[in-house]
Picture 1 (tube, helix red, strand yellow):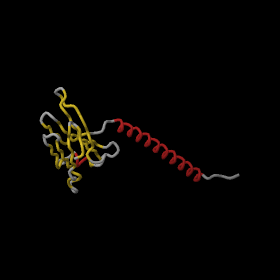
Picture 2 (cartoon, rainbow, N blue to C red):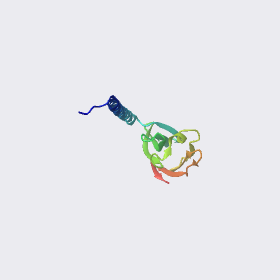
Picture 3 (cartoon, helix red, strand yellow):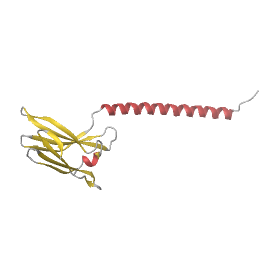
Picture 4 (cartoon, rainbow, N blue to C red):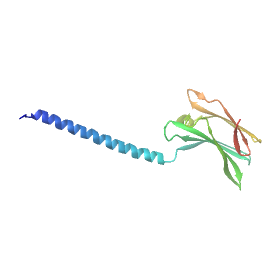
Length: 155
């Protein structure tokens, strides 16, 4: 008959206790992360209007930053065109400026974010947009558009 010493018995208990504690922490951490992720995805993306221009009674043009739901530092920029309908502005078209999540949220929503936002009250209406990439990099190249009959086209 083999005898087990108290030292070996205690070491086995400590190992089992440590393993159970690690398993519990891992399970609770995963459950908490899953609940947190679900709440984040259910929430609407954070937005901030960064520029707007009204061209007479023809067009209203806005630039809006949309924070990425996947990366807290990334953002997209939405350009929207509105036309007057029944005395109210109604969206007639929208495009994404640059790549989806291709901008940085904090520079885009901070001071000096809009380097150029030029429009003209002509038909078609030319439009140029340049935004701050980062303070150290500076501004993006201007992207040119044309607004014709309420629709946005590459310029």
